Amino acid sequence: MHIAALSAADANATNNNIQNGTLTLSDLTFKIPEGFTAVENDQDNSHPGDAEHMDGNAVDTEVSADYRNNNGEKLDIHVGSKTNSKIETINLPNAQKKTIAGKDGYYWTEMDDGRTEYNFEYLQDGKIVKIETHNEDVINQVIS
Image (cartoon, rainbow, N blue to C red; front, side, top):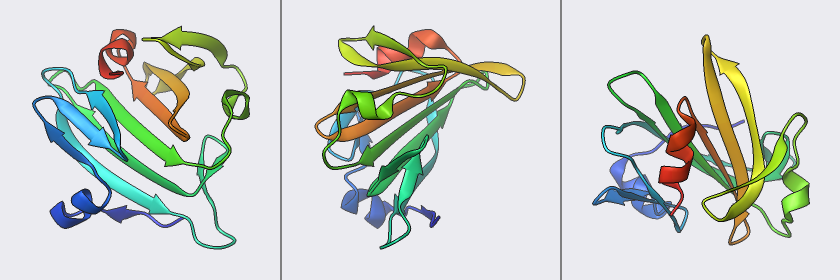
């Protein structure tokens, strides 16, 4: 897997920026709740024979933005570009079908450094979106 930190110039190339509390990541918009600040942005690109993966789903590219608040809660947003995506293709073991903020997707929890992590994956505009957070209510706030 190839991971590269993004510079300001790279952020423009991947259409990843934040204005007035709204993040644009790979042409999709997300609302960043007050109190969260950016800690990292990444872009992974697949190369022939070496596809990137989001929870077992092959994607052509993946961009992500990670945020933290003063309580140490995380908010990580990942967007993977994939052709011919159908919601059933992202069904994950132990995930349940759920609609959050009008998006049909899959929801599950897992432990992350001793804290419950809430995960939600859905498709939008042919892209796989994954939101990870320590606060379940944040998922609803993020989806625009």
